[in-house]
Image 1 (cartoon, rainbow, N blue to C red):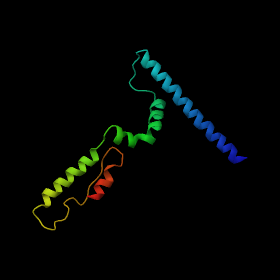
Image 2 (image 1 turned 90 degrees about the horizontal axis):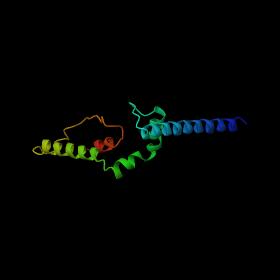
Image 3 (image 1 turned 90 degrees about the vertical axis):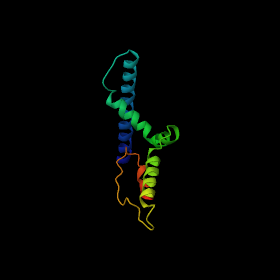
Length: 115
């Protein structure tokens, strides 16, 4: 049937992608072990490495590496706002607009929204 063939084609494509990545990884690490130098690892290896890391990236960044930059920045912004508004009763938060130009984790946006 057509859906069975489509599923088989998808499995074949995924298998081909995995094999290509594994071959690139083996070639890369063999070159490293031989002491060969290159300006960059093979694109297939890098893509596969990041694809395999994507599902656990956020947790690893925060839990294992202790990434706290967004929280620290939000705390500093809050401190500055407190100083700016401290002498004026009922003053509104001094920063009405901001841009999150971070590294793409999405961690900063919610903290800025809370301010």
